[in-house]
Length: 289
Image (cartoon, rainbow, N blue to C red):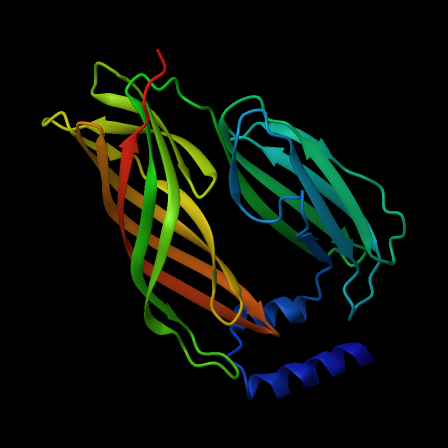
């Protein structure tokens, strides 16, 4: 109980300096156990994309809440595909339910899909905490219409809320020189073409629609995630709406990239919005005879 009163005092004190959201305050007061994906080389800790057959490795830390000190009673780790089918599930035992525990998991997807990876911990007080990441698993297409390589930029405007010691962001920004590869499959009867788009090393499988001019492809909406550095690193999830115009062996990209991201600073939540436009030029790779 003393720890709870101390935490309340800290919240009140920090609120005089930081713009704490009600969500953050409620989270602190809930005294939920700790669960988080560990950011470490070789392990996935945030939403990303990979190709079919890539081994996915995760390291997860769980621990009792430092205020309640309620011991841990259950941990569940699961991976679910886009159809809602659970393809991987484990419920490991705790080494010590009253201390920090580290678990590692590996799974190799053999089917292209969007996978939701979820870690759930419950303590003796029946408090539950859940974290998740999304992994897009792409299947490379047979590039009947060619492979195009080049660079892309996202130019836009960043805004954020104001938190302790830092003014709100309201500034122009450009993410430059993003390497892009687009592989186009066969044009189907409904003017749809399957594609693999790889931006900055992260792939996604999707379809595009060929326009009546037979040179403009409008890709289905997709996500691209990029860490941007403000005064701290913020992982921004961009919703991408992109078109490609073909002119002989040149592909010109245009579109919009609307991103959102959050990051904790002490007990304040930094919320970032990025309103951007896409521009890029790609060249068709020579075919091998």
